[in-house]
Amino acid sequence: MSTQTPTTAPAAPDLSIARRRSAELERQIKEEPGRFRVLTGDRPTGRLHLGHYFGTLQGRVRLQDQGVQTFVIVADYQVLTDRDIADHLVGHVEDLVLDYLAAGIDPACSTIFTHSALPALNQLLLPFLSLVSVAELRRNPTVKDEIAHSRQASVSGLMFTYPVHQAADILFCKANLVPVGQDQLPHLEVTRTVARRFNERYGQGSAVFPEPEALLSAAPLLLGTDGTKMSKSRGNALTLSATADETARLIKGAKTDALRHIGYDPEARPEVASLVLLAALCQERDPRDVAEDIGDGGAALLKKVVTESVNDYFAPLRARRTALAAEPGYVREVLKAGNERANAVAEATLAEVRATMGMTY
Ligand code: TRP
Picture: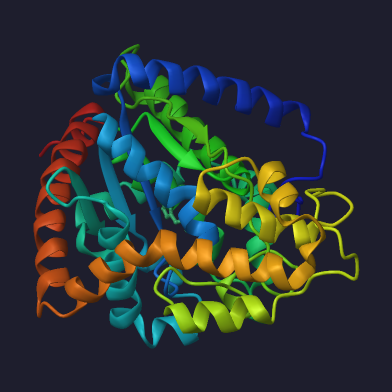
């Protein structure tokens, strides 16, 4: 559940199993990247922030560069339940794709596509819905969490079916690996259940769908400038695309504490530790060493170091983003090509599903 604090809470038993399995998968990926197909993606809710970057984006680029086939979904059907976002959908989609491209997702080898452009993917939702019970959906912790956080008075049927929709997102391309944060683990469990039940009910022993595995991202979550989880909706996020000046201003206003000596203690001093960690991630160093260098320099020096580290690290990405944003029509072309490729895959899978279910007329 996303209410779990990332760095301080003791790992639940199943989480430690998931972590161990992810380490084993990382080893296998290095040996045989061609065995894996990744599906990953985001809702187009606006510009990505540094938590996204170090939590997922960097890992996706690494997988892609290791030679793992990668599909990246822009989940535009998953933002319809938020009116503020849905009203500015095109801008949000373009921002998201620009962030992807600037971060190093290469449309020549990764397929970036929009949910709504794939009719065959969406049609998988119907047979998949028949494989899960309402009680299972109601119990799903991620759904519960989403419902709790949504500002709506009532829950739409769409929101209720997100985990099944997500199963279609993953299974349409037969992805066997899904990089996720721990809050998405229950969603993935639904996908695995759907795949298993489909194979059992219709596959007659043959596995039409793989049971995809979670690849947990190693990077701990970063806190926002107010000391709570970094999130766009809380207005506490440092975006990838912020200018150097905006970055300096935001970090200057970040919450710290009254102790002069800077150390790295995520449990006792979460706000300071998160800033130290951010600088460390940008410098590709151990956070304890970064803290030691700052020592008695206090919050002022800490913030100066963080600002410089972020601005140095993200300067090339930001320059690339600006250049790509200036090319008219580029994002549209990327999506058009990605949607074409993804549609061919989705149509082949739907045809196989129909044949397996005896629905060829
Ligand atoms: N639910 C994801 C998010 O909140 C986006 C998403 C939709 C997704 N379908 C997916 C992620 C399939 C991984 C796999 O950002």
